[in-house]
Length: 340
Image 1 (cartoon, one colour):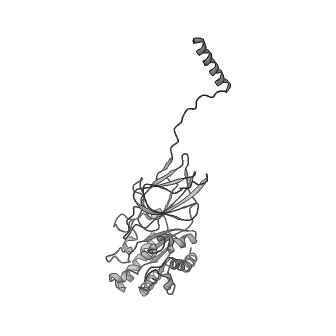
Image 2 (cartoon, rainbow, N blue to C red):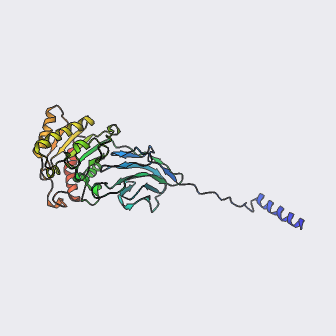
Image 3 (tube, one colour):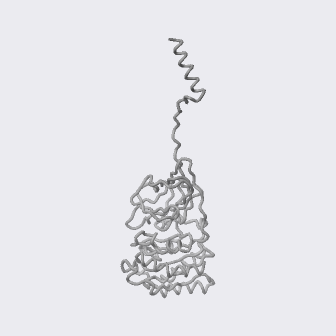
């Protein structure tokens, strides 16, 4: 018996040595997915993002978005609570993800292996919509990494109310003229805008004051303007001030003050003061522009929008529909491009 056992062991060892019998494979644990924190320097955040919490970045104004490159075949967002968001991969169609939270799979169909780009924006958290636009990072394939995408040379900042936000359009800010113009001109774009906003703080968000803030609904903190510089600023305010009893004289003084504030924060930007599409405070807006230009600021202009929009361009008596925002884009983009 001992000889038989010895003989079997000897034969097995010989088979292993000659390759006729491979040793049993050793199981290895699966490699963990790659986690990317919001602080990753390759992620570019456009707009006013609150980055005070390194684990959770939050945009408060309309139009903020993030851009990043990544390798591998999948990408997932790490969100905190429920939100509606939009994502585009490799410059493809923007896909809506509605009522999502936690880990959000942006690639239910895996991509081809290689380098990819991602743009993510959130539905504006304002008015009756109370989503949680809190970005907590990305999850990539095991061994994958992020990389920085090329930065655009120009940035346009749009200042306004629900019209600037894109209220009543099919995809909120993504189908509003600020986003459309920025993309058409190949420029980064921000929107310091909120539904119901006024120029003058009269029982509404007054952008004369809140333009310099991180959050439209909080008096502090101030925004750090060193984080980006706008090459052009487009102001569309006055539609809502009428309903709050703002006089023409008060509006004109406040508009003049806002123009000076914008110039102080962006010394080299071209400032465009749009006449409101409903024709409100046109005389006062023109006068404010004349005041600052007479004072030596040659990089400010009034844009007459009279006749730009017809009934087919409106979803109601105030807000442009998708077609209306495309109409504004076709009129306004060349005006801005001529000054950039």
